[in-house]
Amino acid sequence: MDSNFPSEKLEEICDDECQNKTRIFCQRCPSLVLSPKQAKLVKKEFFLPNMFQKNDHTPIEGVTLNDFWLVTNMMTFDNVGFSKAVDNIMYLICADCEMGPIGWHSIDDKKAYYIAVARVKHG
Amino acid sequence: MAKTYDYLFKLLLIGDSAVGKTCILFRFSEDAFNSTFISTIGIDFKIRTIELDEKKIKLQIWDTAGQERFRTITTAYYRGAMGIMLVYDITNEKSFDNIRTWIRNIEEHASKDVEKMMLGNKCDLQDRRQVSKDRGEQLAIEHGIKFMETSAKASINVEEAFFTLARDIKAKMDRKIDSTGPSKSAGYQLSGKDGSSSKKSFWKSCTLL
Image (cartoon, rainbow over all chains, first blue to last red; front, side):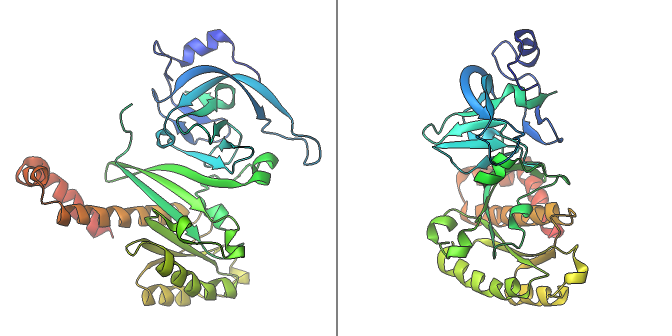
């Protein structure tokens, strides 16, 4: 589930301009993260810690993801939470159930907020 | 890209530690997930979108997240805040007493016309109650602010509280625009059909208060 998105699936969720066709929800609860046509699909390699960690003691486990929805203004989000910054990265979470990370933002780039395609629900 | 909202309000949650401010950070879901990774690093703020009188309002909600322990809440934190939720725990007398201190802190550091509201949280814990609802109401009246008892855990009044605060900020802003905006465009609006309908919605929001 937490791997990269098959390209045929990507066509279903993005329009001709590479914007999100559908609304974007949390995978776990009904919280709306983004409304249609607010984000752009981009290829970008980024390591995101797993949403389910085994325990606090092992090193952080995660995966490198490639497909992200890019939002250029944080106020574009309908609902989202920001973690505190760790090494200049703020992790994005569901504003309701706090599931995450569902994406990330580097405090060095005020115009880029990334939501992992594989960590949200489209519909 | 077109602006997707009509208003943007920055809100702060203020109060002693452990009164449940973090839970009040708009957790509508009953079963918060609390991923170990996220709970270890902590949450900075949340963006929420609500609708009031057919207007889209973005709320940016900040939690002091422990800073209060070190008394480091200063002007920087209050900058730009339009609304403040003062939170105490109904099972903790001390947190209620400290509300007065917090109000003084706000008067010292925050903008003069910041909208305030007081919440007595954890109202699901009746058997451990130390502060009666009446005392909460009295203190709120004394400071001329609104009051509600909430339970973030049982999802009582949390959503309502944010809607009330947002509605009050919006009403205040609309009044300000009305009084300070004798500009040409406002004049046109008032004489036109749109003007009368927006007046109506203004009164509608007033009667709701």
